[in-house]
Amino acid sequence: MQSLPREILSNDWVTILLFLSLCLLAVARMLNSYNFSSFIMLFNTNKYILTHQKHTNLSTAFTITLTCMQCIVFSLLIHLIFYTFEWQINEEPILQFLQIFAIYSTLFLAKILIEKIIGIVFHIDSLINSYIFYKLSYRNFFAVLLFPLLFLFFYTVAPSTNSAYVIGVLLLLSQLIILISFYKKNENLILNHLFYFILYLCALEFAPYFILYKLFIK
Image (cartoon, rainbow, N blue to C red; front, top):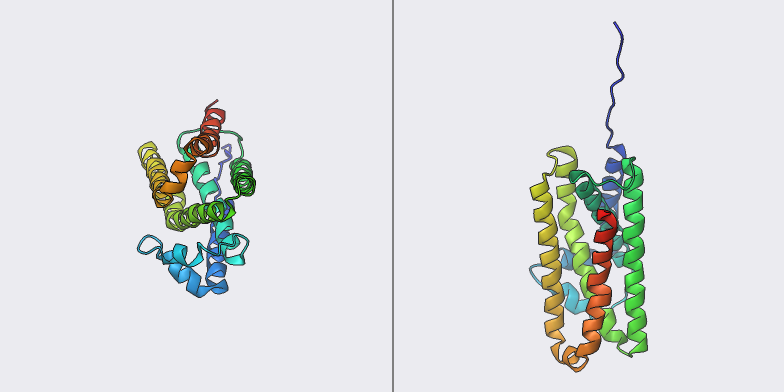
């Protein structure tokens, strides 16, 4: 009787990444428990935003820790969506995740850098810093919300294509609502520079996602 090799799929690397994300969340709470309490209630109250919008500092250990978690969580989510739709950029799952993580992190940091350069060139540093902090805070918050879902999808129920569509649409809608809310608060300034604002939207808010979509689909 000939024995047949059985392929055993391992999620060990996913477990390590999820544990690392949990550790980063715990570290953020240890670094500043007051900020963490305000941050975790972000959908109920914008106290966290109001407290820091005048003195935004993106390089604090608290913000960096949460941002690192965000990059891991969103990269895992994208990897999971790719797996659901059977899109492959690498045959090895962990290598595919690393590629997604590298692309996501690079684009994320490059976008922030370009926005800060725009702020310096047009002498609107304070507005741009508030804008970046506003988006970053909510994106980090979404990462915290998605964290339990990753446990569910990786270890309990594999996501269907319909659930992947729902998650994607909800994330896009929430991102759109957040951006619109910020734009409404600065409506007068935007109307005074409407042409530059439209150029900014096309170049930095919509074009990168369209390019990524085309790259991955091909």
